[in-house]
Image 1 (cartoon, rainbow, N blue to C red):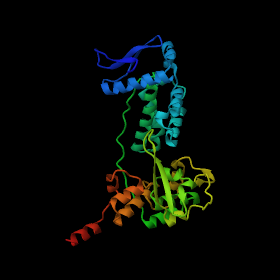
Image 2 (tube, helix red, strand yellow):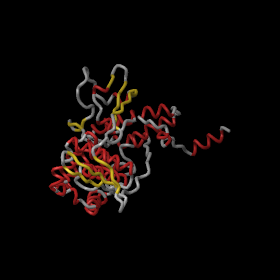
Image 3 (cartoon, rainbow, N blue to C red):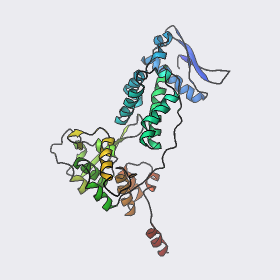
Image 4 (cartoon, rainbow, N blue to C red):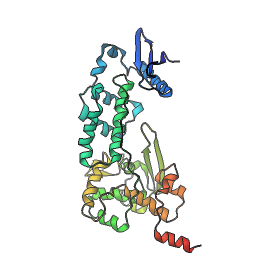
Length: 338
């Protein structure tokens, strides 16, 4: 049983917690009318007090109002509960550059909207990108609220983009591959013949390769704080040929860019975009289309759905349906078979 109790305000129905800890009186709003969410926040607040993440002394002195966004964001990156992926680190670092010395309690929705307008809208970023940014920023702010430095917030987000399953023909692939930087072409060739997510190929180590049995093990992390999931798939000859053989295996990443480790897929996307400008390929088609092409080709060859899902790393078979695109020729053959 916790040392603080849950109390519902009669005036507005909002829950708060109150009690005492080491002789200090505590009264803290949980900023919700939902009892189950209030109980969850109460538990997090108590754990924060016990672990020292929530400083009651600072709270009593009123210094919480002066806690900067940068201070909270750095704690967020160090916390085990929020994950430490490269994408998270990259996003939060951008937030620190923008809001660093601003007291987190003073961060307004207007300031956030200005940041989105300047950094994303002006650059033509998609709704999906804006949505992911706002979700990540909201997580940092609410982490600060859990520590007692600010109020909880819920940001309005644009509807996510409909999922696209753009694919490329063999001719289009050869056309853009001719224009790619050699290191990026190697990377994309692996995506084409493995169906790997770009982040899986970036994180691929030589120790993940079984040269003798022609197998490769791919690793991915699902969601914030999610555990690592791995799958072992056959290594296609055309994917194997772009990987330099090493025996014993090097303790390094398989793919590099100009001799240096690849930080994230944005580095590679820039090369892809420049190469695409020299072709007839639509500007909406990105590097991820190589994974879509891999999956669509398997479906068109009547590979069982469960096998396709396993190769792609999907646990939900419904995720494969999006790749089962049909054409008019397919419809004509189906009717003719009656």
